[in-house]
Image (tube, rainbow, N blue to C red; front, top):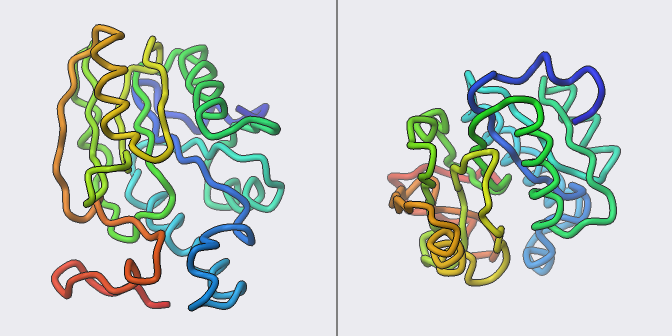
Length: 203
């Protein structure tokens, strides 16, 4: 975490959000969406996830000056992780969270347009994790873990299954939570058209 950010962090739990450079986000939408619109979409979805974290503190994991500045403007702390892949960056961030005396981290991706009520994932046992898979049950959209954990992070294709396996190997209990809103992430053009009952994505 950057110097001076710890006073923004809840002492018991924090939401950790990895965010890549906005201008580089969502390349799979490039055939249907201009770069400026993809940038705006990425910022809009990240804002929705930050809002869903309240009243918990937020740490944004990034290696982009633009994202870091945007995060601080939104009241979030920043974990600066240059040169690391997603798993390495999140592992480094969790080490800093644990070192700050925070007990639990709720890792949420930044592309969840219907994110809500992330605080609900704080009430878990010391050896328990909760996973919200994407609607295809392939990725890990939200995961609540003890900050000081032996869990080997497995983000990437097939991470839902791999995280469950890694949790068992680490002696952790896994609770799988099916949540339609949190399960809806945006990667492909068809993801911009959710069912009516979820709401609209205005892009």
